[in-house]
Length: 232
Image 1 (spheres, helix red, strand yellow):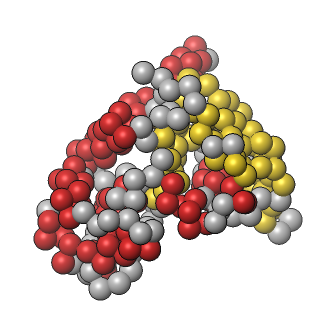
Image 2 (cartoon, rainbow, N blue to C red):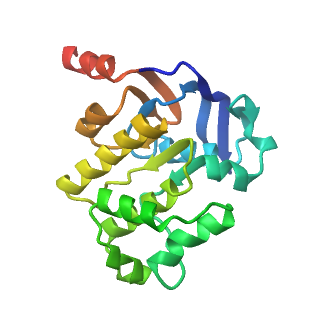
């Protein structure tokens, strides 16, 4: 069931790095519990948009509102607990995987629940003994899955995913998609994900934002987006 509650609003967002305009007059709203695919060619500004929402970029002008509050008035730590961000090539730290999962919970004063950890590990097809491994012992796909688990443990309201299945085979990709759907249905997680896989967008998303050269060219339902391309 659709929840018509605005959770995120971007208004006239512009981002310049040096003399290069990365994002140009970006405006859209996100309703609670929506799953939105962010599509477009490489270099179109998709990752820069997610970084701006997570306060990793400082926009030149415009506004991003979370629950109608300007994110510039929210501390980065408080915002990042509520808006999680998983990178295509995540950064893992410390001595082992367990520390990677535990430390963010301590930092955000969140109870570390080992049962929840094991639940998520099973969901992403990882065995519990991975907790003892060092970060540099993990494959790219294992790092992506651990980073996703680490973010979900904080119980964010919104999660931003930047090609988080790019290093996974088809079976594990489908498992991650099922986990995202599970979190969306059971915990009302709102999702914005970047993908270069149209089939993944069809399976997972309700809406599509299509970008080119820093501009939103289309924002529509996933059905309409792909129907128009079939007609063309």
